[in-house]
Length: 210
Image (tube, rainbow, N blue to C red; front, side):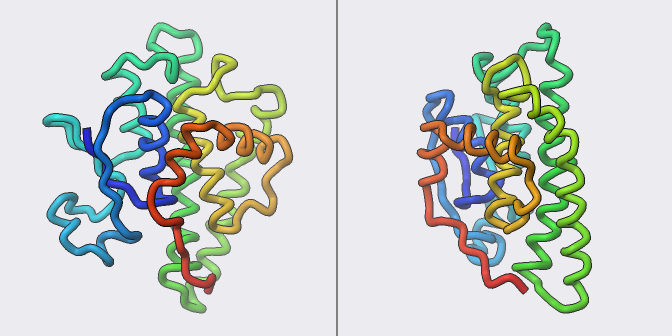
Protein backbone atom coordinates (compact mmCIF):
# COMPACT_ATOMS: atom_id res chain seq x y z
CA UNK A 1 0.00 0.00 0.00
CA UNK A 2 1.13 3.56 -0.65
CA UNK A 3 -0.28 6.84 0.65
CA UNK A 4 0.51 10.36 -0.56
CA UNK A 5 0.25 12.80 2.33
CA UNK A 6 0.55 16.48 3.26
CA UNK A 7 1.11 17.16 6.94
CA UNK A 8 -2.10 18.45 8.52
CA UNK A 9 -4.26 17.67 5.46
CA UNK A 10 -7.15 15.20 5.22
CA UNK A 11 -4.60 12.52 4.34
CA UNK A 12 -3.90 12.49 8.07
CA UNK A 13 -7.07 10.39 8.48
CA UNK A 14 -5.87 7.30 6.54
CA UNK A 15 -2.33 7.76 7.85
CA UNK A 16 -3.68 7.74 11.42
CA UNK A 17 -5.77 4.66 10.59
CA UNK A 18 -2.75 2.85 9.13
CA UNK A 19 -0.77 3.60 12.28
CA UNK A 20 -3.61 2.38 14.50
CA UNK A 21 -3.88 -0.83 12.49
CA UNK A 22 -0.17 -1.55 12.29
CA UNK A 23 -0.38 -2.31 8.57
CA UNK A 24 2.67 -2.03 6.34
CA UNK A 25 2.62 0.90 3.94
CA UNK A 26 4.80 3.29 1.98
CA UNK A 27 4.42 7.02 2.57
CA UNK A 28 5.10 9.80 0.09
CA UNK A 29 5.06 13.28 1.65
CA UNK A 30 4.27 16.19 -0.67
CA UNK A 31 4.07 19.95 0.04
CA UNK A 32 0.73 21.69 0.57
CA UNK A 33 -0.96 22.33 -1.79
CA UNK A 34 0.79 19.78 -4.03
CA UNK A 35 -0.99 20.83 -7.22
CA UNK A 36 0.76 24.21 -6.87
CA UNK A 37 4.06 23.34 -5.19
CA UNK A 38 4.78 19.97 -6.83
CA UNK A 39 3.39 20.04 -10.34
CA UNK A 40 4.46 16.51 -11.22
CA UNK A 41 2.06 15.24 -8.56
CA UNK A 42 -0.72 15.86 -11.10
CA UNK A 43 0.72 12.91 -13.06
CA UNK A 44 -0.01 10.74 -9.99
CA UNK A 45 -3.41 12.21 -9.10
CA UNK A 46 -4.99 14.41 -11.75
CA UNK A 47 -7.14 16.08 -9.06
CA UNK A 48 -4.00 17.37 -7.38
CA UNK A 49 -5.50 16.59 -3.96
CA UNK A 50 -4.42 14.51 -1.00
CA UNK A 51 -4.84 11.86 0.07
CA UNK A 52 -4.06 9.61 -2.83
CA UNK A 53 -3.92 5.92 -1.95
CA UNK A 54 -3.11 2.80 -3.89
CA UNK A 55 -3.40 -0.83 -2.86
CA UNK A 56 -2.70 -3.10 -5.81
CA UNK A 57 -5.20 -2.06 -8.49
CA UNK A 58 -7.26 -0.01 -6.01
CA UNK A 59 -6.88 3.77 -6.27
CA UNK A 60 -8.65 6.11 -3.84
CA UNK A 61 -8.81 9.85 -3.16
CA UNK A 62 -11.34 10.21 -0.32
CA UNK A 63 -9.92 10.14 3.19
CA UNK A 64 -12.88 8.67 5.10
CA UNK A 65 -13.49 6.11 2.36
CA UNK A 66 -9.88 4.94 2.61
CA UNK A 67 -10.34 4.41 6.34
CA UNK A 68 -13.48 2.38 5.70
CA UNK A 69 -11.69 0.38 2.99
CA UNK A 70 -8.85 -0.49 5.37
CA UNK A 71 -11.26 -1.73 8.04
CA UNK A 72 -13.32 -3.82 5.63
CA UNK A 73 -10.57 -5.05 3.29
CA UNK A 74 -8.22 -6.09 6.09
CA UNK A 75 -10.87 -7.15 8.61
CA UNK A 76 -9.72 -4.55 11.14
CA UNK A 77 -13.01 -4.55 13.04
CA UNK A 78 -11.35 -3.58 16.30
CA UNK A 79 -11.32 -0.14 14.63
CA UNK A 80 -14.69 -0.40 12.89
CA UNK A 81 -18.09 -2.05 12.93
CA UNK A 82 -19.36 -4.88 10.76
CA UNK A 83 -22.66 -4.48 8.87
CA UNK A 84 -24.27 -6.83 11.38
CA UNK A 85 -23.54 -4.53 14.32
CA UNK A 86 -26.63 -2.73 15.69
CA UNK A 87 -24.78 0.62 15.57
CA UNK A 88 -23.49 0.13 12.01
CA UNK A 89 -25.78 2.85 10.60
CA UNK A 90 -24.68 5.36 13.23
CA UNK A 91 -21.04 4.42 12.57
CA UNK A 92 -21.38 5.08 8.83
CA UNK A 93 -23.29 8.29 9.46
CA UNK A 94 -20.57 9.74 11.70
CA UNK A 95 -17.87 8.56 9.31
CA UNK A 96 -19.40 10.49 6.40
CA UNK A 97 -20.77 13.35 8.51
CA UNK A 98 -17.12 14.24 9.04
CA UNK A 99 -16.66 15.43 5.45
CA UNK A 100 -20.14 16.08 4.13
CA UNK A 101 -21.16 18.26 7.09
CA UNK A 102 -18.02 19.37 8.95
CA UNK A 103 -14.91 19.46 6.77
CA UNK A 104 -16.67 20.92 3.72
CA UNK A 105 -17.33 24.38 5.26
CA UNK A 106 -13.84 24.33 6.77
CA UNK A 107 -12.23 23.96 3.35
CA UNK A 108 -14.15 26.96 2.01
CA UNK A 109 -13.07 29.03 5.01
CA UNK A 110 -9.46 27.88 4.56
CA UNK A 111 -9.50 28.84 0.92
CA UNK A 112 -10.78 32.36 1.45
CA UNK A 113 -9.12 33.14 4.79
CA UNK A 114 -5.66 31.81 3.91
CA UNK A 115 -5.10 30.69 0.32
CA UNK A 116 -7.05 33.24 -1.75
CA UNK A 117 -7.82 36.07 0.70
CA UNK A 118 -9.55 39.10 -0.80
CA UNK A 119 -11.85 41.64 0.88
CA UNK A 120 -14.87 40.55 -1.15
CA UNK A 121 -14.37 36.90 -0.13
CA UNK A 122 -14.03 37.66 3.58
CA UNK A 123 -17.80 37.53 4.06
CA UNK A 124 -17.94 34.12 2.36
CA UNK A 125 -15.23 32.77 4.66
CA UNK A 126 -17.02 34.19 7.69
CA UNK A 127 -20.30 32.62 6.61
CA UNK A 128 -18.79 29.16 6.18
CA UNK A 129 -16.97 29.47 9.51
CA UNK A 130 -20.34 30.12 11.19
CA UNK A 131 -21.79 27.19 9.25
CA UNK A 132 -19.10 24.89 10.62
CA UNK A 133 -19.78 25.94 14.21
CA UNK A 134 -23.53 25.52 13.75
CA UNK A 135 -23.05 22.05 12.26
CA UNK A 136 -21.27 20.92 15.42
CA UNK A 137 -24.62 20.90 17.23
CA UNK A 138 -25.36 17.20 16.78
CA UNK A 139 -21.84 16.19 17.79
CA UNK A 140 -21.95 18.47 20.84
CA UNK A 141 -25.20 16.85 21.97
CA UNK A 142 -23.91 13.33 21.40
CA UNK A 143 -20.70 13.89 23.34
CA UNK A 144 -22.59 14.98 26.44
CA UNK A 145 -23.32 11.28 27.05
CA UNK A 146 -20.69 9.41 25.02
CA UNK A 147 -16.92 9.11 25.36
CA UNK A 148 -16.62 7.88 21.76
CA UNK A 149 -19.03 8.03 18.84
CA UNK A 150 -20.21 4.41 18.67
CA UNK A 151 -20.01 1.13 20.59
CA UNK A 152 -18.33 2.78 23.60
CA UNK A 153 -14.91 2.50 21.93
CA UNK A 154 -12.57 4.22 19.49
CA UNK A 155 -13.22 3.57 15.78
CA UNK A 156 -12.36 5.14 12.45
CA UNK A 157 -15.49 7.27 12.90
CA UNK A 158 -13.53 8.99 15.68
CA UNK A 159 -10.59 9.40 13.31
CA UNK A 160 -12.83 11.08 10.73
CA UNK A 161 -14.59 13.39 13.20
CA UNK A 162 -11.46 13.93 15.29
CA UNK A 163 -9.59 15.20 12.25
CA UNK A 164 -12.33 17.74 11.49
CA UNK A 165 -11.97 19.11 15.02
CA UNK A 166 -8.17 19.05 14.75
CA UNK A 167 -8.40 21.07 11.52
CA UNK A 168 -10.73 23.59 13.18
CA UNK A 169 -8.00 24.33 15.68
CA UNK A 170 -5.42 24.87 12.92
CA UNK A 171 -7.86 27.21 11.13
CA UNK A 172 -8.69 29.14 14.33
CA UNK A 173 -12.32 28.07 14.08
CA UNK A 174 -12.39 26.36 17.47
CA UNK A 175 -13.26 29.34 19.67
CA UNK A 176 -16.88 28.26 20.09
CA UNK A 177 -16.33 24.51 20.46
CA UNK A 178 -18.18 23.17 23.51
CA UNK A 179 -16.17 21.85 26.49
CA UNK A 180 -17.25 18.23 25.98
CA UNK A 181 -16.25 18.39 22.33
CA UNK A 182 -12.92 19.99 23.15
CA UNK A 183 -12.31 17.22 25.72
CA UNK A 184 -13.15 14.62 23.08
CA UNK A 185 -10.61 16.15 20.70
CA UNK A 186 -7.95 16.00 23.39
CA UNK A 187 -8.87 12.40 24.15
CA UNK A 188 -8.61 11.08 20.59
CA UNK A 189 -5.47 13.06 19.72
CA UNK A 190 -3.73 11.76 22.85
CA UNK A 191 -3.49 8.34 21.19
CA UNK A 192 0.08 7.26 20.29
CA UNK A 193 -0.93 6.41 16.71
CA UNK A 194 -2.17 9.97 16.20
CA UNK A 195 1.08 11.40 17.56
CA UNK A 196 3.10 9.25 15.17
CA UNK A 197 0.97 10.17 12.17
CA UNK A 198 0.87 13.87 13.03
CA UNK A 199 4.67 14.00 13.30
CA UNK A 200 5.22 12.80 9.73
CA UNK A 201 6.14 15.68 7.46
CA UNK A 202 6.63 19.35 8.14
CA UNK A 203 3.83 21.01 10.13
CA UNK A 204 1.06 22.58 8.06
CA UNK A 205 2.10 26.19 7.46
CA UNK A 206 -0.75 28.52 6.51
CA UNK A 207 -0.15 32.11 5.42
CA UNK A 208 -1.35 34.96 7.58
CA UNK A 209 -5.11 35.07 7.78
CA UNK A 210 -6.56 37.56 5.33
